[in-house]
Amino acid sequence: MTALVLNETINKVGLIRINRPEAMNALNADVMAGISAAIDAFEADENIGCIVITGSDKVFAAGADIGAMKDYDYMHAYKTDYITRGWERIKTARKPVIAAVAGYALGGGCEVAMMCDMIFAADNAKFGQPEIRLGTMPGLGGSQRLPRAVSKAKAMDMCLTARMMDAAEAEKAGLVARVYPVDQLLDETLKAAATIASFSLPVVMMVKESVNRAWESSLNESLLFERRLFHSTFALEDQKEGMAAFVEKRKAVFKNR
Ligand code: CAA
Image 1 (tube, rainbow, N blue to C red):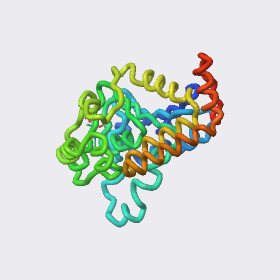
Image 2 (cartoon, rainbow, N blue to C red):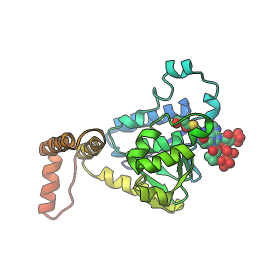
Image 3 (spheres, rainbow, N blue to C red):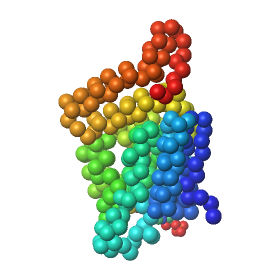
Image 4 (tube, rainbow, N blue to C red):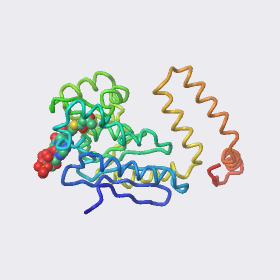
């Protein structure tokens, strides 16, 4: 049987591909376990500085597996904590994770993309939270991360009408960081990931932590958090090297410490 999730190491970048084409990359426990295991491995690998999650040219993921969950009752969903256990590993990754989205990113697919630190989209990307059509609602963060990413107005529009947002609108609305023609998406995302991975890993992790703090606390609290992290970079050999290299007009050689 072909693996539902394929992993590859490209120099200092860990690439994760969702690979369930016959079901539009629908997400089930096995797919999510594959993604979680890949992140565990890439996080443990000192050589890896950035992670990319992608699907195919046609679909990133068309949501949680509808066939698998259609007969769940409330008690099953509640007791098994459906969609929590095993589904949120991306959220706890400390290395940056970029979603490279081509084609459909719907329901849980859009939510997995939004769980990543940023989204690069192909020009054929389509984002949506169409759960309302199924008599349910977003359950993996869609109704919470979408308003933070694109405004309450657009999030309401997408979650309540189930309409899809194309790549151009998603970029304009702030959901995606960059848009590329579909045949260039993966190469360009890997290039950006390689750039991130060329920097000092502890600094990369601190920057990620600091930007995420902006989402989760008041401005004064997050400014203080940023200031303290900034101060702590002066304890790094990589800060000495980075600044010395600038002054000496040469390329910095980081040691991730
Ligand atoms: N779960 C399970 N199977 C899915 C699926 C899903 N989310 N999405 C697509 N598939 C399957 C289809 O059932 C079909 O299987 P068969 O060939 O065996 O019939 C196969 O993938 C191909 O799909 P289509 O024939 O529908 O392909 P299409 O090109 O005509 O349409 C699509 C593509 C617009 C993505 C359409 O498949 C679709 O609307 N999918 C469902 C999207 C959706 O509602 N997502 C939300 C799920 S709920 C959720 O995610 C909850 C949450 O918050 C976590």
